[in-house]
Image 1 (cartoon, rainbow, N blue to C red):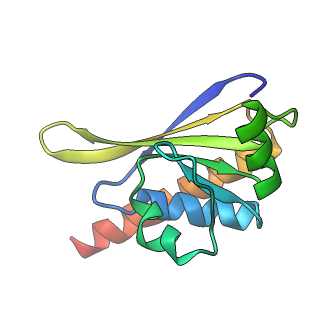
Image 2 (image 1 turned 135 degrees about the vertical axis):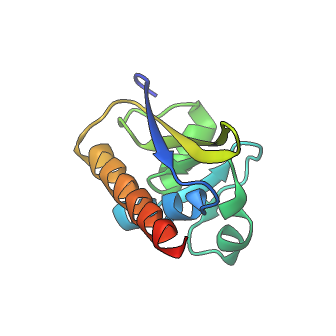
Length: 135
């Protein structure tokens, strides 16, 4: 990691936040891979495991591809900026579950990361709208 930028996003409560994050990352980085923060195992987003278990992760890394993930594992870094994104998902409760907070840690906001952020925000807004209509 070259630098560090934390971006905090708000998502609706009782919503599959990690599922949306994985789908957005897969749309932007076709070959991306997943690593739970509590494991050294790397998983392709094409694996069924991701959609059964990975979607429940609250802290995880998304690497642009498996080669970059291997370099991060070997060297603890990568020379290419924003080759790995670190996500943390936390439920925030103020008199009941009010929302989730998603922290995206990256090297800096470039066009690629900005596009991922915009897609996440759009997905969260759609979910809020759908939850409002269901109420």
